[in-house]
Length: 347
Image (cartoon, rainbow, N blue to C red; front, side):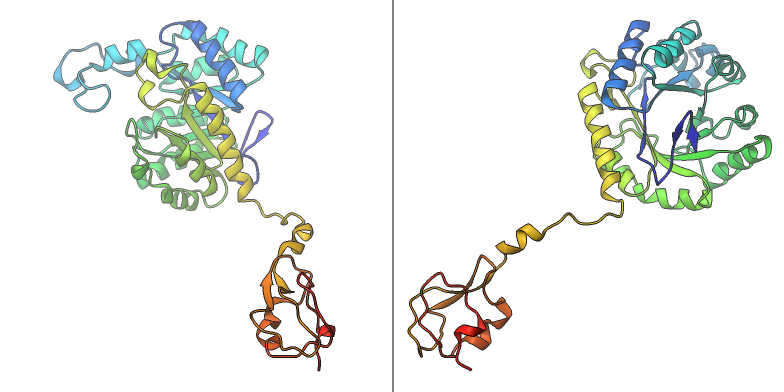
């Protein structure tokens, strides 16, 4: 996969996406600050979510629309999305700032035809489809027809739904380029719920032709680093300015310093899995053990545990000779600190 000029895959450093989502708290200037922080932290891209509350739900107070569990318990869908959405009227300024001021890639999750149309006008170079939208095949078809790289989250999807979405992309895209992100749709996700072994089956679904990654909702960055070590080529993580100031996604977002640590940790995890030569260790060979004289020995005296030992450094006989030199006679007088050699022994 390639987004812009950046190659993405197992042979390249992990592609780190800072999910900005609702962290703007209703102020476009906060988005600019978040883009600054993402760039400073070393992220490869920032990602938005393009929807309006009316395009995603109804303004209804019926029980069907009331969230009854999780971090948004007690809120109605419309009210939550009204608070969390990024106004379409901001998008052009945000894209311009990311590209032309901070030189960082930017794209968006899309949720309906209007958001896809907006992203096309802004020349988005990739699309994200959230796991909640995986079964929304008209949307998947609409995105596929843009012929842009597509990142699919899989958290809410069955294997059948994932394969069906991929088939739609393969049918309607002239150059299908798909990444599957393993995702646990729990907010936040416990490390014990991360189920990173699922990355393997996702890779098998792609037949080795595309890439897999992780959309991470855990509270730190250890899980993301582990995912990279297990083959994740993309890591998506929520970024906020400060959890203390709140926001719909604050509980499972990283602050800027933490995000920078995530980037560093993921890159180190990737580097640790690369085949490499060991560093030159010759200079340290001298500090291995060998056989040394540790007490005065007269010519003709027997060598014993009392006058020879296996110690550092490695200038004497190898420790493997120790059992065979015990009980042999010294050819010459030897002083403590002398590295023992075969020339010191009577045959």
